[in-house]
Each structure stands twice: as C-alpha cells, then as structure tokens.
Image (cartoon, rainbow, N blue to C red; front, top):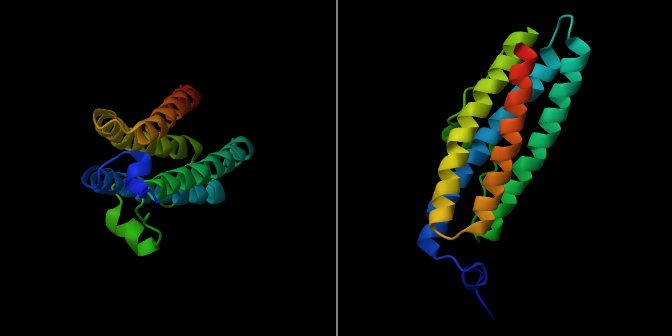
Length: 158
C-alpha cells in the first residue's frame, strides 16, 4: 500500500513546514470568521440592512475557506488546529471588538484581509517553490477572491 507521502509526492519536512504556515493561516481565518460574526451582530446605522446581510455572506464564505484549509492540511497527512486555545496561541490577525459603525466595520475587514493576504502570498511562494500545486492553487484562489473583495469594500468606503 502506498503511503500518503508518496501519493501526494511531497517530502515530510516540506509538509511539516507548509502545514505550520497553513495552521497559522487557519487560526487567523477562524479569528477573521469571529470578527465577521461580531460585526454582523453589532452593526448599526443607516446601512444596517445591507451590511448585516453582507457580513453574513462573508462569514459563510469564510467558513468554507476554513474547511478548505483544514482539508488541505489533512490531505498533506497532518492535523489541522481545531481548538480555541490553538487559534488564540497561533493567531497573528487582530481581533475586532465592539464596532457598530459601518465605515469602521468595513475598514476593519479591509485590515484583516490585508493581513491574510501577506500570509497567503508567503504560502503561495513557498508552495510554488516546492512544487506543491495543491497548496499553491488554494492560495491563488484565496488571493484572487480577496483582492476582488478588497476592491469592492474599498469602493464602498469611497
């Protein structure tokens, strides 16, 4: 029977290194998800209905991304972080609290997205340098989607 290492064609040292990066990204996406939930629940003002709905869309999309990152780690034969303690200990993204103003909420999302992009670009480069098409493709898709979202949210603030 073939080992998982042979099936995905990546050496164990690389898989450990990329998984560390993916787990930090996973922790940050979990924080981003919670940030979006808080914004969804606490938004007030004249744009309440549109932002409340948009934030729900964003956290639902983010939940799917979280699953994709965790499943990539599992595909590499390793374990994704999965506790609140793990996420708190490994996060690099800022936690957003007590924001109810629409413009401030959108600005905080933009800040979070820019922080996530830095990591995703690092993982993309690392994965590409190591012929890890699966991780590179995942990062490429995330980057493309987030760049479009950044454009749209920035347009909202203009």
